[in-house]
Image (cartoon, rainbow, N blue to C red):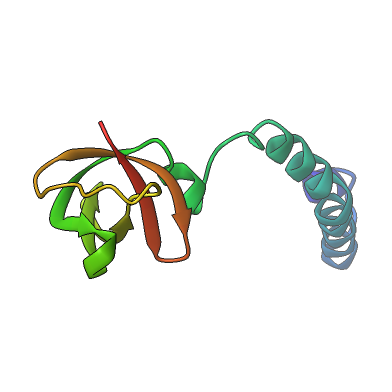
Length: 111
């Protein structure tokens, strides 16, 4: 826009490029951070990564038994190691709800 204005004023190409460069850098270092701050302020309550898995529903694909150190759950198409926080046994094909994710292990409860 400012390069076009410089051309309309009859300035030569060097001045047009210079004015365009100055306003581009100014907008990059001043306007962009303001817009970025505004955009992220509106989305800070969105759960992402592992936090987004809490509350999801899954299906037990391998019996969850803490004494035998077994248990797998399929949640949103992904297969996870699973444990029951209170140590109860959950049979295969049961529906479970994710209550916590610790590293690569999901803590689930029977629905």
